[in-house]
Amino acid sequence: MMHDETSVSVTLYVGVPHQCSYLENETTTLHIIDPQFSMNSAFYGGLLAQGFRRSGDMVYRPGCEKCHACIPARIPATYYKANRSQKRTCKVNRDIDIRYRSQAGFSDVHFELYNRYLESRHQEGGMAEHTQEQMEQFLGCSWGETELIEGWLDDQLVMVAVTDRTPNALSALYTFFDPQLHKRSLGTFGILCQLERCTQLGLPWLYLGYWIENCRKMSYKQAFKPIELLQEGEWSFLDDTRLFQDLGF
Image 1 (tube, helix red, strand yellow):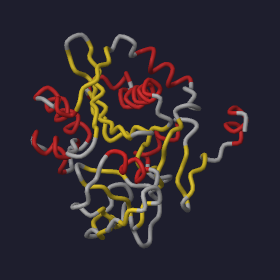
Image 2 (spheres, rainbow, N blue to C red):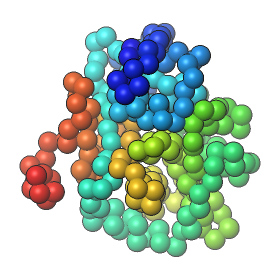
Image 3 (cartoon, rainbow, N blue to C red):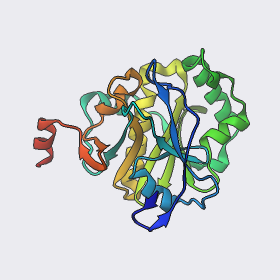
Image 4 (cartoon, rainbow, N blue to C red):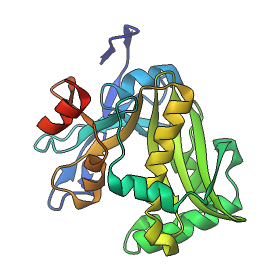
């Protein structure tokens, strides 16, 4: 593939087909950026705009032959407007202290919370058996600028939103939180914290990975409005006439 902004040729490899994690009876194939390519945050920012994302050091995008349900999504932070539910989430979590830390700050405290989260959410999957080293390999990155947005309640770590910083965007990688505090909607709160971080840093977008219309796990993403989807090579707002009117389009 050719990166438009830098005119640098990048080799894409086709991964081994495997069972889709989001849609039953579907097989996933990934297109993976050459692991030997000298990746950096600026180049990754351009790849995000083309629908890529990362897992550890691996940068990929779906390349399934028969299914095209995974649609890249991002929130334009400048235009974002919280709905009543999101405002309520901010209010109920106003007693949480937000701290920022680099990925180099991963510790036993993060792993303990991560493990409890996985055990509650992925009891039947392999993710529930991660070691701390595997956690850091999955969430960390050797070439990027990854930030941990921590939520502390008194002296307890209750939420971590792992986000990648590029010159023009943040990319929400993974959020984990105390499963016993489900009434606080900490998953939503993690996204709201990242949107606030975009505002602090003057970054126009927060990338959310992929949106899948018929996947319940992904439905929360469309609650953040406006939201843009990448379809046929172009970013456009998810169709909502009232939304366009509210934004003055």
